[in-house]
Image 1 (cartoon, protein in one colour):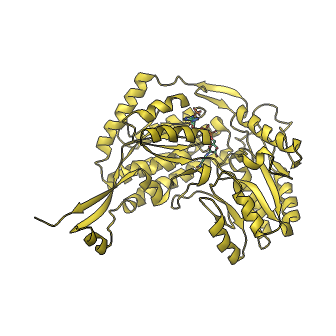
Image 2: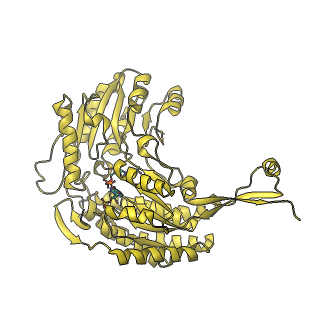
Image 3: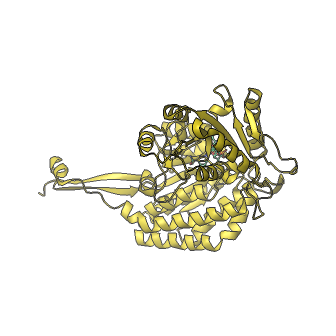
Length: 465
Ligand code: NAP
């Protein structure tokens, strides 16, 4: 895949980039290791000042970087601005909280004594240069949620961003440099996915994080596993959105629309499978379809656009194949189901609601990465849970019920890294984020995220001589 900015709203190639050659990659690896030697010795106050400065700079750049993101991958400008603001918030959050999250841990005195120590504690020390392989869908946020904790922990970062967002990738490198982080503390490698294996095998790269698809995750994890290097994987999802009879239907319908079409439907934690109790199925579905049909699809630079184009021609044809397979096998498109006729250029797709989805259809098992919702009817809680868990994914989940017994049951039984009741699934700096099953492993954000790439070192003192 060429490294290039191609506007998905028009299909026009705006800028192409030469991939880094072997010498340029070597220079960056050298700098990453050199910067680590310096950066690991800084204290939290110094790192925090740099991270706050980076947040200030990003705040100043909000409009320009939002326009870059929209141009490169097609998300509505309004959403791109919000993404930049969210990154500022996360950077400040880690600048303020990293020290406490990585403070020494003191085991219970009885455990210390039991080990024969006079004293013992756990210290979180940085690991070194970490490779981050990132996707285009939240081109700023996915990177910042890795970079902010990594840099605050004293690690350095090497970013291999998706090939269709090179300008956002280069902006990120420049941002941390302008903020005053040492040269090499955070660098962008302009390389294709074919270069990732050698990077993972390089001894200077000590660990890796990947956000992306299952095949990419499998490849990175197996090479890193062969090299005995730690990985965190944030992969795909097909989150269930359960609507039970006690739900506030108004809120549930409004949230269902946003949860499905946010980011033009290309979000790992988008609700994709709507599992609705028979008592409220007809009403929910009618109102959901009405709202989905009323969304404005169009130029993502316009302030009132709800849904822009998909990020690539390939992304759209993958989605088309899933919908076509479902309708061919008997599902019904209650709205949408094709390309909007008024937008012949660019990679647009209509907001679509499918009913009658059954097990044999690909969309029942695969992730629909675009504005396509599958609505299922169930007769009770047991069936809802069974269907929700009938997937290889386990990223997050959403449940609409005001019944506390149902909430207890769902908290026990839903197989996912998150369960959000009566509100939309989202990531927040102070809450851990990640999945189970084929959605990956490890956690980002909160204290869990910053500790993933630390050496939890046991420090033990024997009786004094
Ligand atoms: P992708 O094709 O896996 O690409 C993601 C990144 O991995 C890109 O930088 C890509 O580079 C690289 N890559 C692709 N194949 C690789 C391989 N075999 N070895 C090493 N690197 C490889 O995914 P995408 O289509 O951009 O993103 C969509 C997927 O990401 C969806 O499944 C979505 O659910 C998932 N996602 C998950 C989360 C989460 O937090 N769990 C968040 C966002 C997205 P190139 O661009 O150069 O190919």
